[in-house]
Length: 142
Image (tube, rainbow, N blue to C red; front, side, top):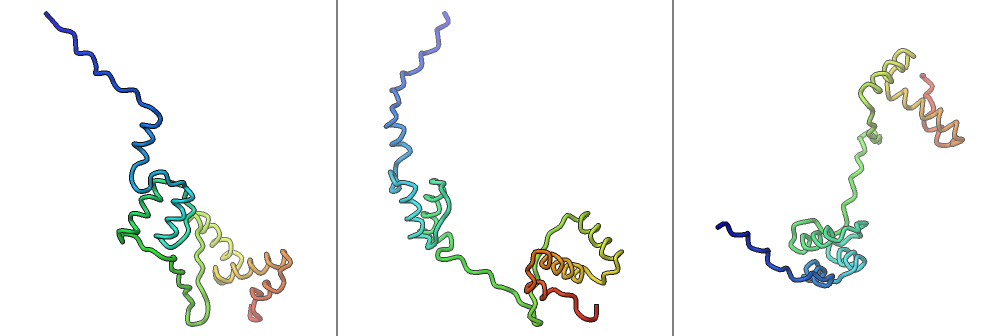
């Protein structure tokens, strides 16, 4: 005779406290977000804007184990060319840049840099920033 499958074992009722204790184990148990952020500052050596508790716990453990850099983030070195100029990155969509380049070439402007210098001069002048605009004024030979 076929027998019925065994009845599932009765599960003990899960209380809210039982669930919390499973999630709240270890040395960070019961620490508030603010306390974890303070611990992060102490161990990692810099502030955090994160409010992600699992991330903060992980990062503290990683810093204590020496697997992540600690201390203030190093400033990015400003690269100044020998002529005293800095290169600034500008990103454009390839098609947009092609249209821009065609426009300044068709207008007889000798280079993209010259085009941007003139555009910056005009915009700063329009804003009333005459002192800054003077730094971008076309040179006498233009």
